[in-house]
Image 1: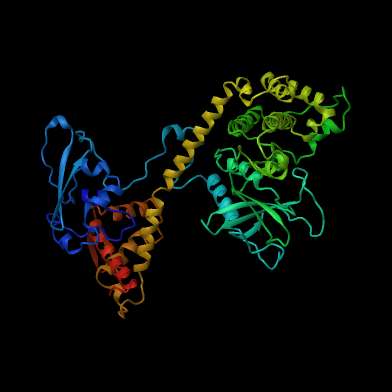
Image 2: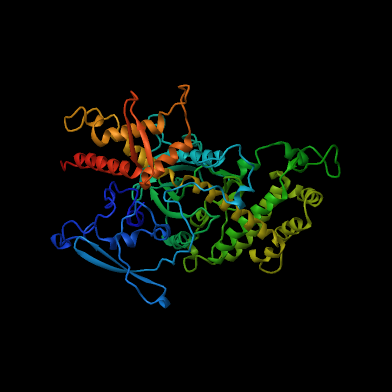
Length: 577
């Protein structure tokens, strides 16, 4: 592949400038840029050099199909740089080539390939029977599930009570069962009836989560100061608040909180506290009686490593909130979202700041924040204790001593001390930073797990990075092959360059064995498409279906035919022919 084509071509461009050039041809042909004074000529290398990163391989490896397009101007060796000169369309361009000098004997592939998995990732996962060109099935299913939820829509006829549009949001989809009409069903957390919807913002076409507070009238806008402070907080363990507005689109005054939408999330309550069996330890036994086997880790209780992973994330969220001068006030299993396996996000932040805003404190809305922050630490202790007992019954006042006994017998002293510190009353103001020594080196364990997870996901991304380019090639090839008619010529697809592309399509997909059985090899298809995209000088034999004709062509010839034909279709579709 030529150096100029590798550096300045883009996969979305139908026909690079040098696609049809034979060795020895010049790039100086064409109209002068002076003929197009309004715009920079498309043949100018300057804008493309700014938007595309050069490929070092194109400078280091000579190719038999390369076309010399630049003349390096010698410079003193001490500078380490080379002045490149290019003449395009009658104009000479000079630029400094900062590419490092080639290493003697270094060879790069002249077309795209798929390298094997990195060693540090390959040894993390079980060995597969065969190499995979695609991401792991588990990650793929998780992403597909998220996409499905994001694109879900509601039949308006089935739920006429849900408006089609609320403020600048449309396509509302309930994320939880709607409360029965004409019935007062207040939320145990907020004291008002609430409902939750997925909606699309017409301003940016992005999905958001709308938390509606039924029948609430906002009488004092001073609380919007706190809303503005919440909107500035961006944290990986907090569901970001985007805006708060009032509406009458639901046939009654309502207050709506718009948050980022995280598809596939479930609450900590539904993930860990729906099983009634762990509650039996507190509900069916009296104090001091331990009939039967006690619950233990991996057999009724959560692993301690999982609890510490949750503690690190929740304490990190609280630290950011408290540093901003705010209080969480929703540290509750029903308001903590879990996405994936262990990723936590605190949801519904800022709701209490608006619902419980006291108009008598207009002078200082932040007056009670220190008190609320202390309550956050107690709430965090209750959440950790409930996780350690795997039951919400353990945080009831009468069951706390029994719950702490269970924690003492099943977990480390660090976890017990953390819970005791968070739940105990202190004479001084406590800070979330005080629990960092109790977390200790476990923080590094979570950091290591996050980085290993990042390595795995990057490796899966590397498997898919070339697939978009290959799909564009197949899509273009599909618009050419077997086209019934073009420009009133029914034989267009069977003649000229199109006939070569038809035979190449058969070479890709219709190979057979000596016995006449279909020969299907995904690596063959991928390799041929990559060679076509790069236009390598390798020769292939294309045999007609009647086996009477054999055409020997190079991939560079096929690429020229492919791009010229597709540009002909594009020009006709745009009315340029």
